Image (cartoon, rainbow, N blue to C red; front, side, top):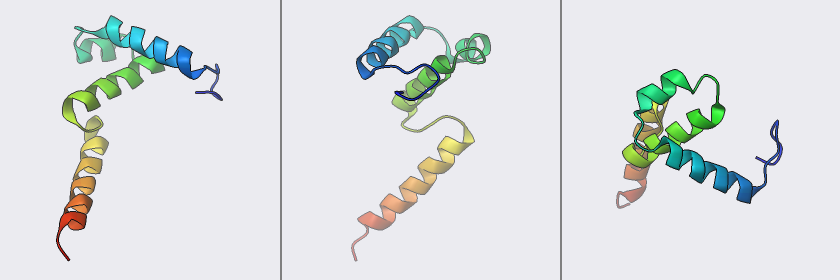
Length: 81
């Protein structure tokens, strides 16, 4: 955030993220992906965050694979020795 193409302070980023989340509320993910995600990285990031908040994992097959690996690891850690 501080070292990107356009550096942004944390407070400004949180305000931007909140406004973007509110603006996207109610719009279907497929519509937003088709219309805006190719042009705006922030929209893609916000959709990934919204997906995670809803489903508890990152989107796409990679997110599902990471969730499976994490579940296996946590299962091993929770097993009594």
